[in-house]
Image 1 (tube, helix red, strand yellow):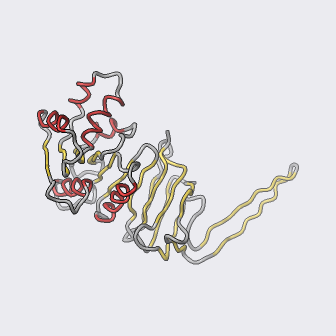
Image 2 (cartoon, one colour):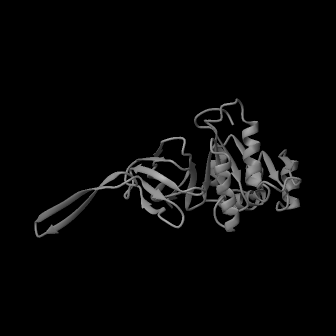
Image 3 (spheres, helix red, strand yellow):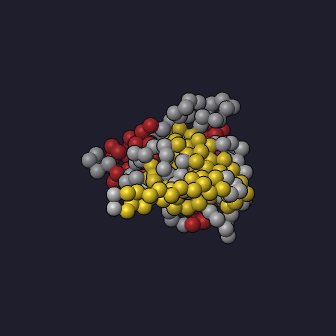
Length: 264
């Protein structure tokens, strides 16, 4: 991908394609299928574009690369795309990394320049299916903390918030929200603060209750003070939260997973 602010690559995994897959595919600079993800593109793209001839859709939505251990892609699909010029990168010798890991490493190794800060990788089919696959995909976020990797499904998106930064997350309300979560996968967070959420984490926040009595309204407001919020598995994690503002700020002493629902 070109090193520009709007450059991104698409990786397709072996799960059902989200409804917006054709749009993201059309605008991507690089398109990589992780092994059986090629089956999903071959079978799924014509289903998402029913008004077009299946053969035309398949030739148009051709991956640049099929990469992985080749234990899931069907032989006829691999041959079809190979005949169209798709590169087949067989890494069956490497059983220590997941297919997503292989694809992310390939994209980062082949993107121009040493500065990868503008590189973004959108992963389709990353959620749903087997739980161990999902956890493997989330682990890849931690393995490449300096690369913007977004895991996508029809229902939500996930990306990593490294502890090395204070994060400003712009909420695109036409497609995102309102439900969101912050999850400390890996290590507990002893200090997390947020703004822009219905239930913020951090040193202080305001809590307002409105009570209407006939034509009068009585407002109760208190300032709730506490230490920075501690989050861990077996304790508090922020799930089913709500975005209340167009910008969410997050600071933490631990890497956090940010997730937000996608509107239908």
